[in-house]
Length: 468
Image 1: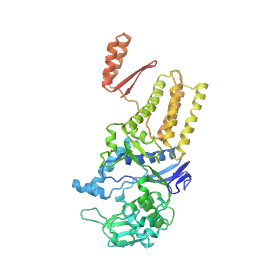
Image 2: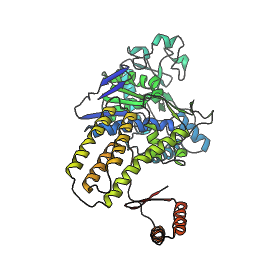
Image 3: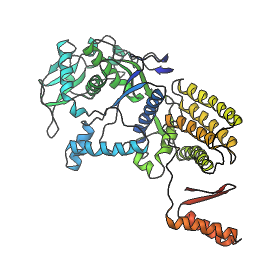
Image 4: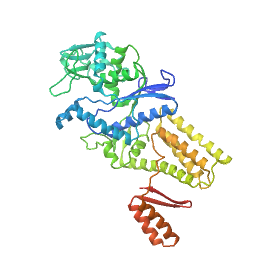
C-alpha cells in the first residue's frame, strides 16, 4: 500500500509503527457555525482511508478533534449574547448530525480543546524548560529558529519567510524575539473564556491544541496525520515544531493532505455568495450523493462543486443502489437455493473487480478508480444475474458489492421500506385492473402512486417499486 507523504513529496510504502495497528490524527473543524462542504471533504476522504485500512485488517485508532475555543466562536457568542461554550456545544451537535448524514463514522475519540487545557499547559512548560519557548507579559511564544528543521513539511525556508514572503505574526510583534515566533499561550481579553496558567489567565494558541490532543490519545509518535492542504502551513508546520521539540522524537511518519474544493470553478467564500453548508446541500440531495461526489476525484486533486456534477453523482449512485435492489428482488423470487457449477465460476470472476478496487485504493487511495471498479462490478452483476439465478449466487453477488461500497462509505443495501396500507391496496388494485385490461385505471393508479413518491417498474418477475 502506497500513500503520498507531504513530508517527502513522494509516494511511500505504508509501514505502520506497530504491526497491525494504525494511529491516525485528523484535524477537525472549528465549531462556530454549520460545517461547509470544504470541511466535508477531509471528513469523507480520511473516513474512507480509515475504512480501507480496517478492511485490510488494521486496528485503527482514529482521533479527530473539535476546536471549541477560538476567536470565531467568541465573536459568534458575543453577537448572540450567549457563552462561547453554548455556541461550540450547539455546533458540535449539528456537525455530528451532518457527519451521520454523510456516513462518516464517529472517531475512536473526538477530543475537545477546552477539556485538554491542562495537558497543553504542561507541554508549554516543557518547551520553556527546554529553551524552545519564552514568556513576555503573559504571552508565551515558540522560538521558531530553535527548531532547526522548521519548514520541512511546507518546504519553506525561514530566511525567505523573514524577508517578507509570509509571516507568522499573531499578536504582540514588538514583544517577540523574532517576528517568526508564534503564540503558544495568550492572555485573555475582556469577555473571553480563560483558564489559569503560570503565565496569565488566558487560553492556548490553536497549534498547541492538536499537538497535545494527538499526544494524549495516540502517543508521542503517530502513523498518519491528515487534514486539508490549507493546514500544511502554518498549522501543521507548527505542530511538528512543538511536538518534536517537546517530545524529542519524530511526530508523524506520514502526512496526508486533501486539495481544495471550488464552487463552479471559483474559490468558496462568503463575499462571492457561493458559500455552501452541508446542511443546505442536504435539503437538495441525500448526503450519500455528496459523499459519492467527494470520492469521484483523487483526494489530492482540486475538486469543483457544481449542480451538474452533483446530478452526475446522483445518477451514478442510483445505478449502484438499483443493482443492489435488483439482486434483493431476484433473491426474493429465486426458485433454487444452492449455486450451480456455472454460477460458482461466474462468481469467481467477480474477484477481478475486487483486485481492481484494491489496486486503486492501494495506490494512494485512488477512490475515483476504485469507484470505476465498482461500476464494472455492477455492470457484470446486471448482465449475469436473472430470474433463473440461485439464491446463494445472488446473495454472494450482493455481499461482494456491499463489501466494496462499504469501504467507500456508500450505503447500497438499504433496509426494506414498508408501504402503508393505502399504497399496498393501490398496487393490488392496479394489478387487478391490468388483468381486466382496464388500462386507463391502471395508468391512473400509476400516476397517483407517482404523486405519492412511489415509482413502479413492471418486470417479468413482477412489480418492483422504489421511492423517488
